[in-house]
Amino acid sequence: MINQPNIFNYATSELSQDAFIAWLLTWADAKYKEVNNQLHLLGLDFLQSLLVKHPIGSTEISNLEIKTQFHKIDVFVSFIMDGKSYGVIIEDKVHTTDHSNQLERYKAKIKELNNHDVLVPVYFKTGYQVNLTRIEDNGYYHYTVKDLLQVLTQIKITQINNDVLTQYHSYLLGKDEEFDNAETDANLYLTEPLSKWKWWTCVRFFHEYKEHFKAGWHSVPNNREPLIAFWYGGEKFTMNDVESDKKMTLEVYSDIQFSRGRIIISYRVSLHGNPQKNNKNRNKIYNAFKQYLDEENISHKKAHFKSAKDTMKLVELTNISDTLNYEGLVSLMENNDLLSKKFAKNFTNA
Image (cartoon, rainbow, N blue to C red):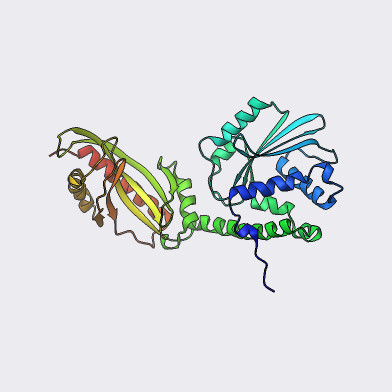
């Protein structure tokens, strides 16, 4: 039998997911009990799963309101239960992550507008996410695709026989498989060499070692394929501009990227407000830096020069074995950091 086309395979944005969340929660309103009691009970079950530590039990809720894009909050739910006012902030994500202090801002905004007796912030994420630090620090409950599937069980979906539910449930099963695959990939770094690493492997490794290296990292979208960048270490040095003789403060640091299925390890130069339009200064730095690479027998290639405003690539290492495990990679990264610091300390304008 051929499966029917599923609208949620096309409506994959967070706005589409917002709509489903709001639609199902609306069924929790008592006025829909006579319309479809099974959907009403499912809506209540869904609301209960979001409340986590605040059981609804047999108590009826009243004054239920569902608002989407309420002061930029994806879905906001308010209701009265046992004489107390409840507010539920739902920050809905599929693949993107929180940004711009939005979690903190949303809580502050709701408290400013209405001081609910109980405020429940929920980070609703059907995609996989490794780093939950900001979510937890802001007091949000992480609600996953697995939490949702505990509510939308196959038995309930079959009994209710609603096209929207059936198609969304089918879509969620695919998201659940993606979640499990991502979790498996994330843990590969503990057992597999670099040749086996995947996107989520690098994400987990970078997250676990960001404090060790005092590093920054994030994913970078581009027209060809997204990549993950991890940058760390380095030390400032000064040099005179080859053309103007103006003194510049620069910094050589280590950079790791995962792109097109492989890890690329490089050294880059942070320009600290000294944009470069030609390769003269880059070549001067490279000629000095090359001596240190040669002393350590580090195979490399000089990067192709591009006009740069903030950072420019200096060299890319070419002798990285794909049989290296994560402990070997950590050792290599530490040595790279020592080399850049040694260079910066000893650099002269000569």
